[in-house]
Image (cartoon, rainbow, N blue to C red; front, side, top):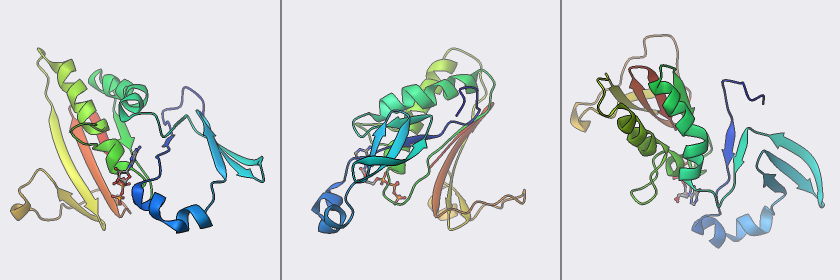
Length: 182
Ligand SMILES: Nc1ncnc2c1ncn2[C@@H]1O[C@H](COP(=O)(O)OP(=O)(O)OP(=O)(O)O)[C@@H](O)[C@H]1O
């Protein structure tokens, strides 16, 4: 994809998780037939590359969320505070690592907390209007996650625009607009 494109598509490779390492099914029946470099995933059959899928960036299993954030998300967060709109969206099958990358944990924060930290650092000592919304889309029902759970009811979608997704959490900050989804 050309550098000037407004949309960047990246892939994050994750290591096998315990359940997969323990499963004879994965290792016996699905031998690895691919290899990756920084910008492509190659399909390998009998030692030869038979297909190549190109991306703006492929993050290997040893690259950290922080590295991914610095390279991919931070420039977008910075430009948002300067007045541009932006969305960071994580897509993948179940257990592929969307929550790990976007939410993370207290010892390895994900893209959303890292972005929050940068937004607040950037607007520190400035007068700045920040509006935050946090929504979940589950089975095509949109829920406001900032609302107490006992008060929650599905939000209406007003613009004929609907999301087909098993689960999705959208975190959006408006003043300018940045939305972070998984
Ligand atoms: N880059 C990574 N390095 C190490 N472990 C990872 C990585 N990405 C994901 N994992 C682990 O893989 C498992 C599945 O990840 P995660 O829960 O983020 O998947 P998900 O895409 O959000 O799944 P679902 O759609 O089912 O909610 C978790 O145990 C997580 O800790």
